[in-house]
Image 1 (tube, one colour):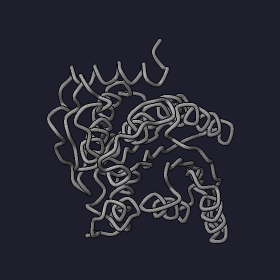
Image 2 (spheres, one colour):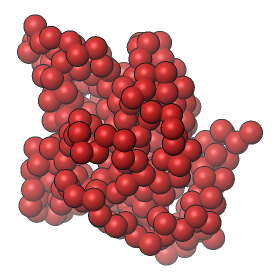
Image 3 (cartoon, one colour):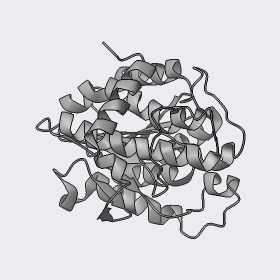
Length: 274
């Protein structure tokens, strides 16, 4: 039996790819891991694997393309655990999901913006009280070097849609949110950082995009784990990392007006406004 460290982590999209690697590594290190995914079979198989290795894990199912499901996931987390030391917003869709045809979520939002960004925005806000209660706590947003400025006149990409544009916009939105949230959480004992874990890892997302992988999920996992437990990043917040190194994101991330516009829009779209 792995000795518990008394800490609990929620990792979205952890039944596959880099999320799965990180879930197993944290469980091996004594964390209680809340595994999230859409596929119950895969989720329960991973939980069984973690338990067989002496770890502690539970599976929480949710489809993050639905605002109602994200709310239900947040409620399930609060019913499952009294503390949350770590939230990793890792779940996401790649540009290969829909390269040329714009798709929408259950709520009518552009699909990649909904899953890659809005779901994490809402889930994080719903879990902030639990994270603050468990401080010191960390939030890690798994973003990308693929970034494109948000067009606030057409956030849902009703004109000139491409899968690449949708993906890059959603990933930059995560970084604007990271910087904005870090300021809001200053002094709370909760930090939030974003990262590009590794380039073209050997994941389903990359293969669906028709791209030949050039790095491994293990490399990406190491970069995420650095933000989870690195002493050198303790207390640091609102930063973007490329792998292990602090980096600069797209200039829009540092535009306070753009961040305010995104926050206002996101609160409205997720039903958190007011």
